[in-house]
Image (cartoon, rainbow, N blue to C red; front, side, top):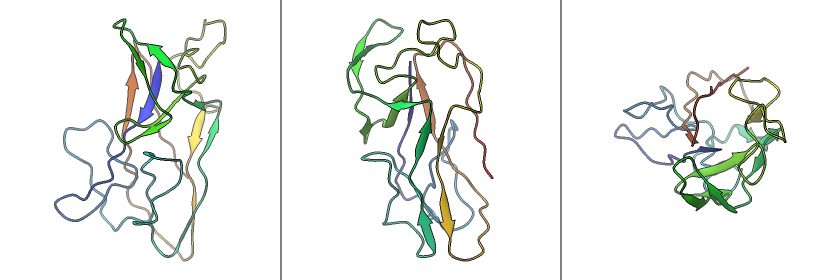
Length: 157
């Protein structure tokens, strides 16, 4: 199984842009204020300088217990084999428990996180505001390829 973030670097009808994107909803989620920072994750793990606020200093995204896809072929549950590049416009950022996309099962030889959310497994996005700022929206899109079950959590502080 490989999880991936889908890029949604697009303007909406009201000229707002997604921060990170929507979360499995039929209509795009919209921020209530201008975008401060956005990580499209379609070419690298860097933010978009085109939409970053002048008062924002972005941090570098970091993984804890996850790695980027190696781009090698992966067999998904339907028996289909496909390759997923670490970053692409179609899938965004592709990462997994190991670079080949396997090892997610809690009983696999290389024991992964299983289907439960574990606070020790994450990708961190950070930024520093140059002045007091109020963040009213975190917009996030995620998809999971070939999963029987499992959970996704989003935390912020």
